[in-house]
Image 1: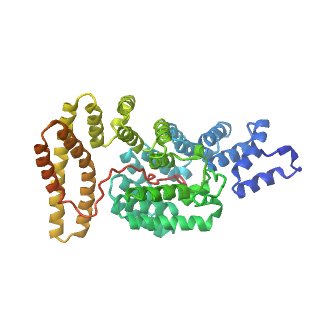
Image 2: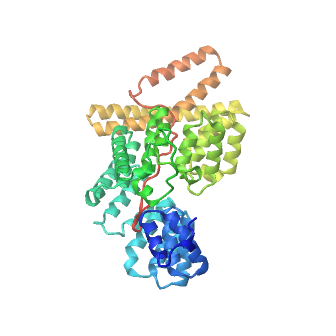
Image 3: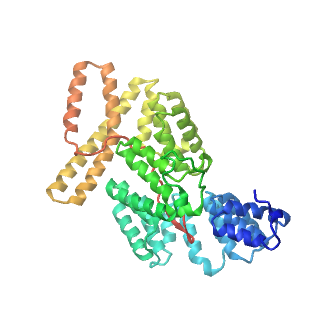
Length: 468
């Protein structure tokens, strides 16, 4: 704690601004709090506190400061913008949207529209977000970025990549744009291209910000937390390392995935974002299952819970044969089941039913496998047609579609075969296995068959004058 009373007279303001200039926002806050306690209507103290809280990622406290400012100084419209933005960053979306409507100054119209688009995007209201983005200037590179983010949500990754590249051509190299491009390549399974963009982000972060201690934890060097500063946010290092971990995990390089997480700038556990906490739980589940389950259960209660958390927690309960816990989590979070992939819900539901009614579970697995097997045949035919037409782009798209379909099909086939092996004759099982095997030999070489389970940090959307 900085002891304000020991400062020489006349140095107070200079000290605070010196801390802010050097990015020492916690120290600046320690200086400002006594001034605020002495005069809780001080515009200078409140505005600087709001700014510093925002910079360290304490958006709830920032919103509180700006909320007080707009009550005391309602004529200053910029505080209404900062208030709404802080609410949006702290996941108080309804309040953020309501606050944005109080901004009357036409000077801030563009910022307000961008902020409202960000709120709609965070709420998964894609039509609403798109309508807001389309109101922005077409020659604004932020508009290109935001349209790209919407295209990612629609799984139109090639078009999204073009938007992000167009934005970068205007704005120059931006780590968050490079991350968005890497994310598109990740979803298209173009891992080499994704890793190239990730390497660029990491190299720039190390070169320009050695104070972020990238890689120090992996080397076993004891370093203190760098906190959640805006500097860290602007480097996109956290997102880049999470995406790198996701790629390594998909490639079955589990040691590389764990290393990507420890290479990340060091933060204490309470400072970790939800995506990093999720990935840590997932990638260390074999060595620390109890801790992993605790982290996933904690995340399930958070506003910023990664969408994969619910399904992954259920899958891991099933993997460890905690069927009762899986059933309880599904029953307690019925609102989340509607957001799950329909196949995953059907599969998990059948697994849980299997504990009390094997016959019913077999019927469900049989139904799931038959539907997906038919789909696999259709995609296989599509791949063959694309190859005959020498359409390489269509082939790649169909191969990725096949890969995803196979990952959805394989568990149900396996459970159906396992059940059949225990309840039917060995001859029937051998005949059925042969039929599946002959079909599987038609698969595309090099496709992945493991379940996708690691959350890659979500797309970035521009809101107001900051990258959110």
